[in-house]
View 1 (cartoon, chains in turn red, yellow):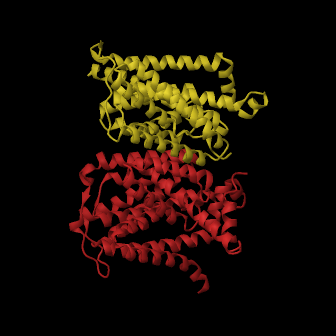
View 2 (view 1 turned 180 degrees about the vertical axis):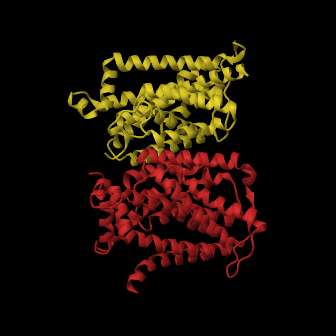
View 3 (view 1 turned 90 degrees about the vertical axis):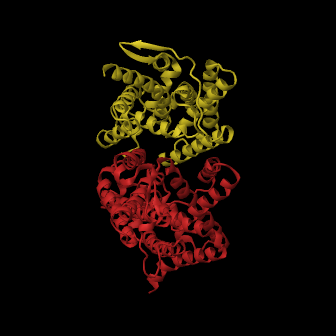
Length: 333
Length: 292
């Protein structure tokens, strides 16, 4: 029981805070919903970037896989929203299993770029090749064909919010478990030195494959949530130009930590919200901010909170967390 | 039919010229400094926008070309001396994210100064030359000829001058070069300024063909990376050959089936990365980002 509560406490507090925030600022419900969904998407990227140390410039592709899997089902085949979400997860799983062996052999920059190429080709497929079923740039509209669901009516944005809270809670519990499990430690070990992990007897290929597939599934899940909340999908969801957002948000929060992705998303979307009220576009502010974070706050938002917290509490409480981040950042040997 | 493909081939040569000019910075940046130069396309965008501004205000394209190259080289100098020096020797991922933020800042600046809309740039001359039945704009031929002479200049610079020889030695092994008493930092700065100037020059040359838009560097960045990877990182000759191939893929491919102009290069990159990640003229060793 004690074991279990370790994994559940943090995510529950997080979800509770989000729900409280949603009722404190009722007009900002869409914002908090987007923070939760984008948060799942960033968690997916953080498994890749923060734990395994692989940068990808094609994350929107994996989001698009989920979104289009759900949208195609709802627009052409059926009406059940839960089946749509399951199909999106399945599509993510299949993508991960098929593309994984080819991609994860590549390291570093090549991996990042082949993802960019995948993203561009995915966009091309959706816009041109699969035009008869995806409707190209016009997108798919299917809100009318979605059937109501029992308990939570997923046709209503306010109920989608609650559903997203449940999903986010589950994903966070999984992610907390991952952070503290041997698997998470193995991922960090691979980031520090792959040859040493091989020497210790780990099959690094399988580990990478597993991590990559996890990323695909979580990103597809986030994509399906987008598809269901908006009731339509168009190719702009998987534009290569949006790949930067993902990296920036991951970095902002503090890669390789449990609450980093969530705080990164909150900071990134918050800044975007504020900046776009002042300026036309947000690129300038986000670019400057990322450089500052890169050079002066290596742990990101969450890392900074942790450092301040441990200073206040006399560096007893968060020692384990600090040590694990240090070893992960140990660099190549 | 024949003249259609002939003009496609010649259009492709023009594209190759631009691709070659903008890709050198990425190729050398990787070979010499071991960083991934995501922000190289900022100079391309700056060069194009300077040309746009000067053509709009003075009407002189040559002036725009010069100003674009100068502004791009200055921006490259500032970025190298103020920011990238702190990045050398760090992880590739880190350099990628930092230079990508510089790219974002550049896009933001351009948006702030010139607005979000894309704008056309006037052609310097509209002469059309008939070659074996195909109607070819002279400007595209000029672009190709200019970039080829740039290749000859770069080749001479790298092979016949002492600075160029130091740069080539630096690509092979930076530590040894430093051991010989050559200031590698200065070499880095010179190379970077030249490369960013060339990218700006490429942007200025390309602006009458494609117009200017804040995000113009983004697609070009991907194409430039494809060119560099196909050619092999750090090899100037490889960059030239792959630029020639990519230009034909985009132009002739686009003539056969429209969307191939955009997606064809990605298909090439896909195949190259999966089956021959060293590229055509790749140098083995540290330059590849693989853990040995």
